[in-house]
Length: 119
Length: 108
Image 1 (cartoon, helix red, strand yellow):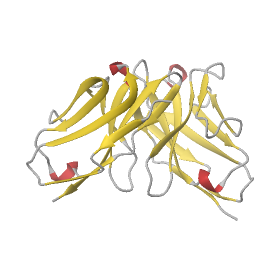
Image 2 (image 1 turned 90 degrees about the vertical axis):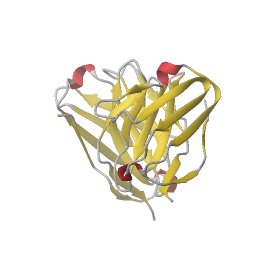
Image 3 (image 1 turned 120 degrees about the horizontal axis):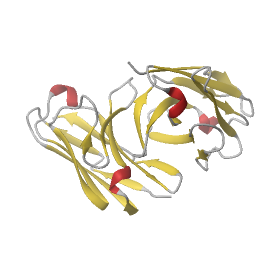
C-alpha cells in the first residue's frame, strides 16, 4: 500500500532554515509528481509546492517563492522541502502528498510533520 | 489565482440526513481539476472526489460530486456518524493549486 512518511520538522528561530523529507513507498515514485501542503494550527489547507518527475518542472505558491525549494531523489524514493528565511507565519503541519496524475488532485497524504517558527 | 469560497462555514445535521456542501470559484474551473477532501481532527486529509464527480478508491457511494464552471457541490446522501468532519474543495489551474476555506459538518 502507498505510504508517505514525513520527517525533519521541529522548532526553529525566525530567519532560520529547515529541511523536510518525505519517504515514499508502495507506488512507482519515479513516475509520480509530488506536493507539499501545509496547515497552520486551527486553519485550512494551503498548497506549497509541486515537483514533477525532476527539478525541470516545479510550481511554487507565491507565499514561499524564493525561500522554499522542492527537490527529489528518485533513487531514494524521497522528496524534500528546503525551507530558508523562515517566518512565524510558516508555522504549520507540513504534509507530503502524491499527485493524482492528469487530475490536479492529491490522492495520498502523509501524516505530516510540525514546523514551529518561534524566537 | 482562483479563489474558492465554500458555504456554509458550518453545517449542523443529524445522522441519516442529507448534506449539501457548496464550493464557488472566483473564475471558471475545468471540471477535471476540481476535487473534494475530508479531514478529521488529528488526521491528514483524504481524497473523496476528483474530476468534480469521480469517487476516489474506497469512497462509499453516499458521497457524490457535481457541478461545472464556477459552482460545484459535494452531496452526502445519508449521513453516517463517521462523516462528521471538515470538507475542503480544491482546484488546479495555471500552475497553481488552491483550497477552499472548508466546511465543518457537525452533529446536530
